Every structure is written in C-alpha cells, then in structure tokens.
Amino acid sequence: MAKYRSIKGAEDFSPEDMSARERVFGILKETARRHSFLEIDVPCVESFALLAAKQGDEIRQQIFTIEKKGDEELAMRAEFTPGFARAFVERSRQVQKPVKWFTVGKVWRYERPQAGRQREFFQFNAELYGSDKPEADAEIINLAIASLKSLGLKRGDFFVRLNSRKLLEGLLLRIIDKVKLEEVMRVIDKMHKLSHEAFLKELSFLPDKESSAVDDLLKLDLDAISVLELEDEARQGYETIKAIMAMLPEGYALFDITVARGLAYYTGTVFEVYDKDRKFRALAGGGRYDNLIEIYGGEKTPATGFAMGYSTLKLLLTHKGILGNPELGPDYYIAVQGDEWKEEAVRLANRLRKNKSVEVDLMRRNLSNQLKHAHSIRASHLIVFGEEEANTGTVRVKDMKTGTEKNQKIPDLI
Ligand code: HAM
Image (cartoon, rainbow, N blue to C red):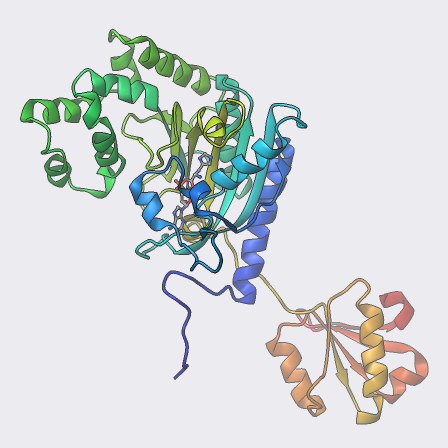
C-alpha cells in the first residue's frame, strides 16, 4: 500500500497522458497563433486582493490562499483573467491595441471534485484588450470555435451558447427589483444543474408572479425578443448578439438566454461552449468585461476573452476517440551482444540521437531478454550490436512491425 496519494482533485499525467496533452496544447497554441494572438506567461501566485477583486463570493471562496509568511496575502491563481489584466495595465502605454494574448497553464480552485471538475486543472486562456466592437467578441468566439475544430471536433459536436448580460439584465429588470438581480443571476447560472422544481424553489425568495415571469423569460428566443420593446442597454445587447452571429461560421453558435456566467466581472456578451448533448460540463466560457482594467488601476479599456479547460476537453476528445493512443516507443533499440561492446553501443546510441530517439541496454540483460524488452517498449527498429558490427561499421536494422531486416552502414543511419 502506497503511503501517500495525490491530493483530492489533482492528477498525475503518465507519459501517455502527457503526450496526448502536449499534442492538444500544441494544436491550441498553433491555432491561437494563426489568429494572430501572442503567447505570454504570468505567475501562478498573485496577491489575494488582485485575484478576489470584482469576484462573486463563490469564486472568492474557491481561491487557494497561501499561509502568510510576511505581511503579503498571496494566493494561487484560479483563472488567468486577473493576472493578464494586471500584466496589461503594467504595459498598456507601450502596446498597440488591440492587444491579443494567450497562454496555457495550471489554475487552482477549491471545488468539489467530480467528472471534468478538478482542484488543479489546465486552462487555455485568451484575452483581447482595446476594442468594444462586436468584431472583438467575434474574434474571441471564432478562436474558441477554430480551436475545437483544429482538434478534430466537427460541426454539431459542440455549440457556443451566446448571450448578453445587458440583454438578460434588461429583461429581468422588467420583472424584478434591481437589488434582487445578482441573486437571480446566480440562480440562472446554475439552473442547468437543477431540476425545474429545484430551480423554482431557488427562486422562491421572489413573489410567485415574479418567479414564474422569470421562468417564462428564460424560454425566449431571438425572434421573440426582436418584437419586444427594449431599453437602450438591452437593445444594444440584442444588436451586438446579432452582429456577432453574422461573423461566426454557420452551425456552431446559438443564442441561449439562460447563459448568465458565474463570474462577476462580465458586462456584455457572455458565452459558454458545451458538447451537443450537454453530456459533459462546460468546455469553455468567456465574455466581455469592460470595467476590470479600470478597477485594476488602468485606463478604462474594453476587454473580452475566454478560457477552455483541459479536463472536460479530455473527456469529450476521449469519448469521440480523438485523443488517441500515442506510441511512445523509441525509434531504435540497440541490443548489446557481448559485454565488452557496451561502451561502443552507448557511443553509437549517442550518434543516432542526433535525429532519432534511441534506447540502449542499461540493465546488462542477456541478448534474448534485451530482444523481449525491445518488443515490450514498442521500439520501431532493432539493432543488435557486437563484435561484427563494431568491426565492419555495418549494422542489421530490423523493422519491428514488419519483421524485415536490412544491412545499413552506420553513417547512413545518422
Ligand atoms: P470559467 O467559466 O470559470 O471562466 O472557466 C473556464 C473553463 O475552465 C470552464 O468552461 C471549464 O472548462 C474549465 N474549468 C472551470 N473550473 C474547472 C474545474 N474546477 N476543473 C476543471 N475545469 C474547470 C474563466 O475562468 C474566465 N477567466 C474565462 C474568461 C477569460 N473570461 C474572460 N476571459
């Protein structure tokens, strides 16, 4: 029995897991670069005040704080948006807008672990600063769509569910009082995790008439909203959604009035990405937040962004059979025939390692066990190295898949 186990909600990545993860991250980074986003990095640890500013209680409670050593209150990042915003504020005078940054890294949240929900997990995160236009929202959403497509997901496998906080809040304020808005938004944000009955129960702090009006409101589609008399802000939210939709590829995004988003800083467009059946939790989420940069002490700057979690992505890609089963065996396994040739075999391995991955016997196994080992680690090719090979400078290379063998001069292998 192992004495220690990994902590709840944190996971190890085996070589196979790592290989799959690196492939996914490589594709995500490459896609971001094609959309002209630049990669940055920010610290894992920031001041608690920065991470908690403009956050609802739920997220604030999820932040892993670090025991105080001096007089600084530090914490682990629970998302990238605050760290990116701080980094942007520090450089906003030097950079040309719009600024488009991305990163991939670990974040930490004190949550109840479950399928697709961890305490330590990876996010791919992208932010765009400096434009308040629908084109900027569309740029972010287009990156989210292109990322999932680049990974091999197809139209109909997932949907971007798009909404506007301005529109939703405007519609809600026709029914409820402003002081109740935050609480109602919180209930809407989690409605898909609740039965309809439980959802209505959560709204029971409202008079019956109001809660059933809220319930009805959440059934509206864009056509139904188009004929309503809307306040200016709500109208603007509606128009923005229409404009964004026109800039997205067909069949990937839909309007969903129930998307509220849990984070407190959003001011306009919000979206979440789910697999088509909502079998898994959200793959990604994001939106516009036009006040945060100013709250962090920068000049008022519009901003929009999104983050995609690797945990849910991994579940969906595995479910679709896309994640694959990487072959990790070396290109060559060099078996040593005769102990006196082992030094030369190691030197040969080093020469081949210029271009190929090479494993050589490190256990002083006998030849037949070396051959078994080469099979079990799935080496692509086998070379047996001994006196004859050392003298002639020619080796017999066996293709382990087909069994074919051919003689090759060592310099030709390099
Ligand atoms: P979020 O919705 O909190 O948004 O997280 C984004 C994504 O991270 C989720 O859709 C999910 O895939 C993943 N995720 C969240 N919590 C967990 C968890 N406990 N375990 C595994 N995966 C998780 C944000 O983080 C915002 N900062 C996104 C953003 C960027 N908005 C504007 N810019």
